[in-house]
Length: 110
Length: 111
Image 1 (tube, rainbow over the protein chains, first blue to last red):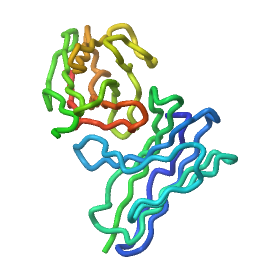
Image 2 (image 1 turned 120 degrees about the horizontal axis):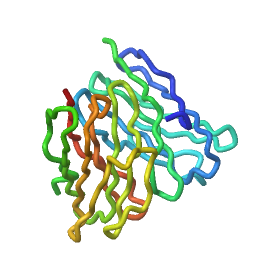
Image 3 (image 1 turned 45 degrees about the vertical axis):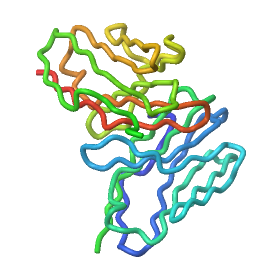
């Protein structure tokens, strides 16, 4: 995970927007992913973006990619208690191995 | 579609023993990857199988080996277990540029 870095914790009030940030080092990354992991569970693929895109929107999720700065963000609109989980950013070159960050623990407070 | 299924869900083994974990990929997926996730960390890539061959390998010792069968299912074998092998082992399947879909994992505890 040293190729991908994320902040470790984020606390957000229910109904607000959450923004989770990620930086990566490999300029040859072709795809960048966001996964969600709830306690004791596997990883759920939330969304992914191709490296030639700068934005992707999918319902409450918006992914922004700044390829020049190698910065990826995930915005969750209208955050709900069910959004409390660990969120992982991951990158891949040519769709082979995924390199993950250490994860951001998102806590949604009432 | 059952998605990616892994078995068993939990396992306890003694140091020095050997273990086999199993994975059935999502329907239509032909590529299987294995990851190790230690507590509080992100998953680490072990290896990937495609067309029954190991296509890429992460920084794991030879004690970790695998296999892919003609029906695309896969096994992960770990020999001479160490306490440090205790982790959640995740299987992911994919097809072309579909994104990797993960199973629920096998929690391995080595005592």
